[in-house]
Structure formats: structure tokens, C-alpha cells
Length: 465
Image (cartoon, rainbow, N blue to C red; front, side, top):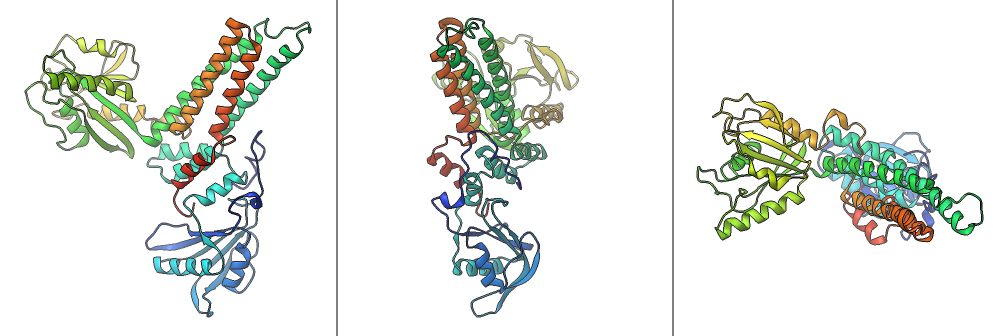
């Protein structure tokens, strides 16, 4: 991030490195443990250049690779490689940053790091380079988190979404909402402060209409963020249906091992079974549940209660029905839900062709056989699309649970502002709700984030990033 993209964002507090509680010089190995062709030791802070001058015997030249020998205290060569010097503030952290690129052996890297620490640097904490970039205005909190998400991406779709967040697509959208809310607050407060003006902004409904537009657009942003979270965290899938419909057989087929007991006796599964699998790199959290039916068995009744509870926690529901059974009373338990796919199972016994079937109860339907595997490829494609790995996910950005929570809280306050304007005609209260909405958006990008939250976020990063 070579420009001051974050610096120009309204409300972001950009501080000089000297303002930070840890303005000393930090260092860490920035490449993975083990052997490799190249290993990198990264240094950031005010003493980076003097340390490298002592290490190599000459001062580093800004932004120009230089071949140098790295020497210990007795002048003996530790290694030889390239020195890359990025003076602050035009660096990743906003401070003077130097990368020492040597041979990627574990012992060589440790010797080189030990020498750098001996010359005055200290070992960096996990995520401390990115944390300094955030504090120095080189990126906001969403972009900093995208760094870790990009490193941890398990699919091409997740990597592309993380890059979009890192490039500022998510942050710029949030900034747009901040500007719109600021304009609305100005109009509302003007109407409060100057009631004698000829145009009453509160009475003519214009502010209310614009606030409703913001609420609609925030809802769309929450949907996009939810899709991004699925790419990062995976999809929680609840498998539900009547006893003996083939739920456990489906779990075993997707997991490709015998996780659940399968018998011809209805009600074999009485508790919740969980299995995590990878589908082309996308984590899927499968939850097999007890069969949905009325029962006098106390244990099975508790299993049904837990099955219904899993429905509320699931990102997607697979409703398994026996293709040979004409009645589907279990549909009633899922009325009002949109995240459902009906699976017409046991088509090996009914001679139905596998694949897409007629829509049922407004839900997509697939004909499959968990026993033979027929139709499971179409099911896997459906699950990948639900997780955001389809071609239509090109505009998705990476998001986390905390992002969605902040957006929802902001949306709640925008809805309350509409109520204050439409029902109460209370401009002061509407203005306060809009201010609170802005504050939650500020929590998202880091404008108002607490030190505890920042510590929790950056401690999850790898050392050297």
C-alpha cells in the first residue's frame, strides 16, 4: 500500500510513529518456518537503517535493491543477500522498513534475526507490523484484517474477496455511508436550529425518504458482507428431515467416511452430529440432526428440540425427504425460511433422474441418492454457490462476524431514525440515532475501536505481518 489511501478518509486519526506507545524498532522473520529458496527478515522503526548499516558495513540506499553480506559481531559472514530499504512514511508500516532477503534455511534465518536483535531491535509481536500500519494511517482496520484473510485464504474466490477488502472496496463503501449520514445530520440539525426558515426539511419528508434509502442500501451491504463471511469462515449446514429419510447417509456421503450410524430403524440419530469437511477449499460445517416427528420417547424428543435449534444457527438448510413418500409434513417446520434446499433422496429406489427437480414450497429441489452418489455433484455445486464461491461472487469482499455485527447495529439506529422522523417528528432524537449509526460504522473501520479490540484482532496475525 504505497499511497496514503487511508489518510484521506474522513475521521481517521493518522499519527506519526513517535506517537505510538511502542516507537522502538521491531524485527521478525517474515517467511514461513522451514527450508526455502529465500528467507526474509523484516525490520521496522527509527533504528532500522542504523542497524543494517552495522550489519552490512554500509548505509542502505532507499528503494534500490543492494547485494550485501550480513555479518556477525566478529565480522564473519552469516549470509549474503539483498537489502531493500523503504523510508517512512512511504512504506507498509509508515515507518522506515528494511527487508533482508537471504537464503531460506531455518538456521540462517535465526542467526540473522539474532544479530538484528543484538544490534538494538526487539522481536515483533504477532501482527505488529500491520498494527503499526493501522496506527500510522497506512490502512484502516478492515484493510488490516484483510491482510490476514488474504494470507489465510483457502480458495481463489476467498483470495479475490480479501484483495478487494485490502484495496479498500469495503472501506470505501462504508465511507460513503458515513458521508451520507453526515449530510442527513446536517439537514436535521439545521431544521432544528432554524425552524423559522421557509423550507422545513422535517415536514416535507425529504430527509425521511433519504434515510429510508440509506436503510435499504445498508441492508444490501449486510447481505454482501454475510457472503464474504461465508467465504472466510465457511458454511454451517443443518441436515434435517423425517426419520429414515437418509440424513445420516448424506452426511457420510459428503464426509466420505462413516461418521454417523446408518440403519433401517427410524430414529437412529438422537443427538446432533457434527462434521467439518473441505469442498474445493471451502470449509463446510455439517450438522446432522434427529428426525423431525412427534414422539413420546423423551430422549428422541430432546433430539428433535436440538434439531430445531440448529435451524436458527445454520447458514443453509438441507431438507432431506424420501422420494418415495408423497407427503412432506416437515415443510411446516421450515415455513418462512429462504435458505433451504430440498433433497429428494433415495432416487435409486424410485427411478427418478438425478439433478435439478421441480421447485417445492418456493425452495430449490435436487434429486439425489446418498446411497449411490447420484446427484451429489449438483449438490456440491449448490453448496459452493451458497458459500459465495460462484462466478457471481466477483463483487464480494471479505468480511468477519464483527463487521456484520457493526453493520447491523448501524442499520438498527438508521431504522430508529426513520421512526423518529415518520412517527414522532422528533428531529433531536433522529439526529442522535444517525450519530450512533455513524459510530458503529466507525467501529468497523477502526475510527472508534477500543485498545482491547485492536489487541484481540492483531494478536491473531502471524509473526512478521
